[in-house]
Length: 248
Length: 255
Image (cartoon, rainbow over all chains, first blue to last red; front, side, top):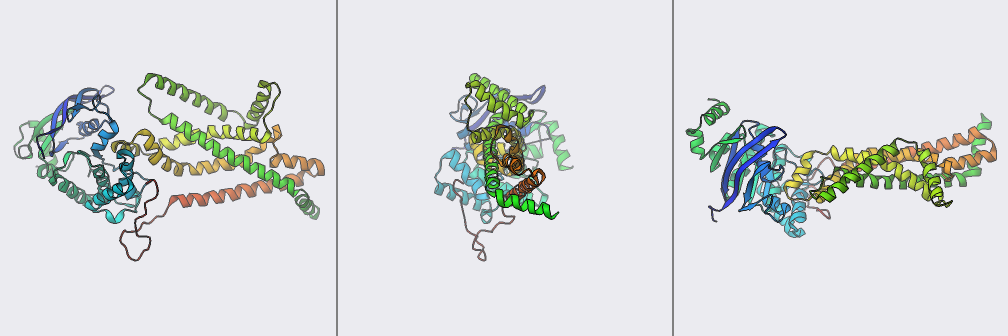
């Protein structure tokens, strides 16, 4: 695996809602196999950045390159692009009318055009991986938050993505369920999946990611290795934020 | 009192073919009107909640269609169905120089268009009330808007709007009685004929009243049962459980 291959290159990305500027001049690069954690206070633009990357929000200015192609003008199909760039949401967003298995099977058939057997096999493989193979007949409303999030991860994995974007995947969970989701994410990171993770879990950012991006008021304040960010941050704001969330 | 019951009994035994014919026509009008109205509602609801195209021409077309739908809803909700029946039936006659459509067909058209206006609002509300996350979850795996509607939104929509649709059906059973003004031979029209033959106005309408109630009550119960069925099971089977024969993978067609 070529770990130097650039997956994303974000250049001068800017996003505003009306007069409110949420992202101001964001520049960053994500290489294949990297796990990048994005941390920062609420309202700093972390989620908006992630949502721009898979075009749930349309950037106001600047460009996002995926494997060298501009995602707004240079990719052949938005559908295919989104299949390659998976997303896991804070609120899970599983399809309520489908069972766990159907949630993982039907997008493969509809978007990737996979046959029934291949889709089933893939779905069951990843449901097993996240420890949800026993619940394939359940509907989302019958599951706990942690279980739902694991199914959502299996759904994203079933699309055979290049990258998965995680938008605060543990923020809506009860504390005792955070662990089960983080451990799934940890094992994905160890297998070399490229991941962009917006998170408030500082231990995940510190122990699992290769890089940590600290955002503040719509800009990337610091982009560094976890060791530097957590032990000896270069910027005063990073230091202040971490001492606030880590409580020392 | 005994006289009253004997009159009622006479009406039932003597006129039951006409009464049954009226019941049949009323149910036919109410059922087809509700189904066609629902289809109108779903189509207009999808159109009105669809994102506008980037193509300028399609965009203008879409906005124009939205305007027409909005006008349709306002006009048909804001006027009585009895008047609509007269305007449509005689309007057609006026426009074609005296031709008229078959009565039952006219009735179905009128009830469908009228119900469609209510359904359009019911469906639009139903789509809006579905969690935005369902759309985002579908978009994030790469589904198109059409796929999202067909496979994710409409199945949830149908479940959500079923109580309102049932309600429309019951209303239609009663409101098709206004079609007597153009001479559609539904239950009320039949009772009018019976009354003119036996001159027992109160007794005749009493019988008809009871028949209407039996129809609406039965339909309400049946629809309630269907709603319960659609709710689905509250429990699920653990895959691999040996005590439960259902505990194997069932993938429905089109999953």
